[in-house]
Length: 528
Image (cartoon, rainbow, N blue to C red; front, side):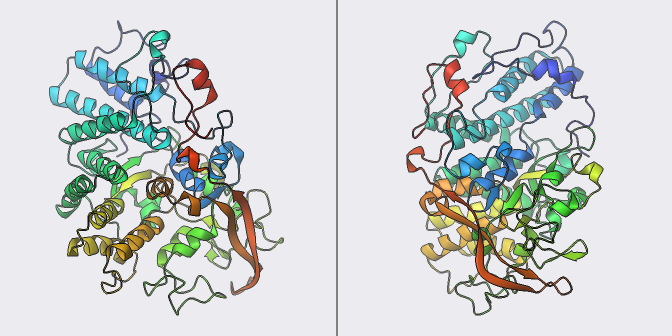
């Protein structure tokens, strides 16, 4: 059952939790429901919790983050990632805005008000832990994108009191880790199906392990990832048997791999995922395009890279590949919805230069479901934020970076690979820290493609000069045989755009000018 938004009407929370347009720290609005009439009963707490979950994360963030990287491309300026990806963002044209504190104010308000309600103590503790988790998640996102940010843990009533300085990044990270550790001991040990959409102990530990990995706290990351893996061994989580099916809406009720997800409900709290991701012929906008770099990252079915394997044929580049490639990227010549997909020829409705077609020549296949036009903007597909495969790779990478190369490391990677019908890791080839590091980084990229993690990986590995710089290419041009799908490839490749990596920015986003204007104590990030 999808708990979030199933019972409570969202319009109730328009006055309770929506800001009045204040910038920066989200000063408590004057049109909120009166404290004299709300925050009194357990029903109030239930209603408020549903409001707390409203837009805690959105699909139009997570999937689009990979479009800021060498995995993909966003052709529409209004998606607000194009200028970040090509290095042209500034304080006035900043792309995505995660510096806003409206969510933090909402969580702080909930955390302050719930203790006064007379209700079941265990339920109250769980509700508070859920709000603390969501606040920690928002701060996780903030430190990843901005570095130093103000750490605010109480509702600010006076606008003048909101004009505070940034808190050092390390202090915010310490707060996040402490909060996640604390709530992991309160939240239930359940998967997303059992919790009905509420956050769980496993979600807190998995997010904590992710942040510890990003911070180079490898021993801690291993320990917390191991706790989640042990939950899987006890039956709480399990890898979904079919990689493609893992992302299909019809399999949600049997998906025990999901550790944290955004839940959507048709008509009540829907998303426009299918409108954005589907090909033009299916009514989509092709907002999310894959690029050649991610295509080339997939191994051959023998477990070797395309530069190493004798199986790779430049004239049949999609044959004998890692099966996840064909489950993630839709390329010309692939069988799709009763036809052979074709972005290469003007006569095709998916021609790459046409409106709503992928400008790289590659659509993204992951998440796609062919639906009637009425559902394109009324989708109910949940979107996973953390899943078991990521935790397995987190454990493996943390162990590799710690120099603890044991059978458990290979086993963790093998679990991910064999689910995708790829061979187990060749222990003779990948026997050193350097080779295993190369492998786990590639495995993260292809397994988690278009799940919003690539930008953070590039940042922590500091490979922006290679991954975020120079020309971006898409598919080779050619012609597609409509009867057989065979492609006659030319030597010319689609050029998508040129990107400029700005090392002085240290991968951080620009703080919006309106936030700087509202608070003179906040300084813009370096490089803008």
